Amino acid sequence: MISTDVYQAADLLKSGEVVGIPTETVYGLAANIYSEKAIRKVFEIKQRPLDNPLIVHVASIDQMEGLTKDVPEKAYKLAGAFWPGPLTLLLPKSINVPGLVTAGKPNVAIRMPGLGLTRELIANAGVPIAAPSANPFGRISPTTAEHVDKYFPELTMVLDGGPCRSGIESTIIGFDGEEPIVYRLGSLSLDEIEVKVGKVQLRNKKEVAPDAPGMLSRHYSPKTPTVLCENIADELENRTEAKIGAIVLQNEIQNQDVVQAVLSPDGDLKEAAQKLYATMHDMDQAGLDVILIERMPETGLGVSINDRLQRAAQGK
Ligand code: TXA
Ligand code: MG
Image 1: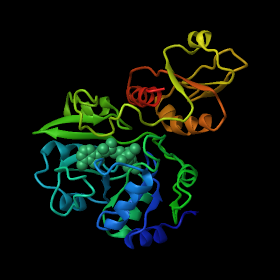
Image 2: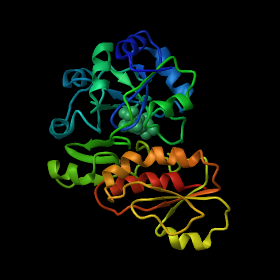
Image 3: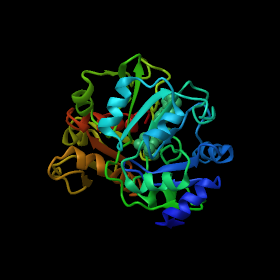
């Protein structure tokens, strides 16, 4: 059931139910971190292996401090700059975080969501809330309550906070001593981070960090075969499929036979990020033989979008 009742959602979470919840990035499949039953159910319905940990969402710095220890100075600096918002910090966990949530790892991933409704929900539930993206393992993340309802009709409730305003997942930053390391590119761009803490290392490739978060090479995938293209018009000359879809940043191509979607008529990468997953969901429902997606410029959020597109397209 899709609902806007934040108090009922908080009660359900408190009592150990799994609830679909909105955030500014993507929708999550939420559980009270202290309910083992609810946490297990999240892994189960998402078909997520138990060795892949969950992000914990908090409504205050106090709540974060209860869940962590030895927090680096730069983590406070980043939290001060970007919380509430699409930044997840990997921090040494305190004994207050159940091992099931972190898959036995010594760090806990924590973020304070940018959407006011999500913080209100956490505050009312009175407990930290674990939530992975609300998609079956490997599939496209949901950016509307309807996406979640379609993936998981068995949920008692999906809290509706409208379409996500950022549209791709949070950026994940861990620390090597005091040195920030980016493990997953996301809604917060590298440029924005580097303005605050200087040059950061990127360790988001499987080869470099086999244990790094969100780094499975096939991920965020439509069911329809998906191809990442430098140039859609050139790629079309090589395609033999009957029904072709194309997702472009700004300029439609001149071809009546191709089903097209423009992410941002102004070429605005923020708008493109916001619309990306919903557009991929729609294209995936359209009965196409192949989806071609144009590579974005490698600036700002374009870097994060290209990361997702690469993973969506691999292994087809
Ligand atoms: O924007 C987001 O971050 C969304 C919304 C719902 O908050 N959540 C999200 O969660 O994207 P998920 O589970 O789909 O992706 C989180 C990634 C996973 O790849 C997981 O392996 C990694 O973060 N992760 C979580 N906790 C970790 C930990 N303790 N140590 C290392 N990696 C961790
Ligand atoms: Mg995910």
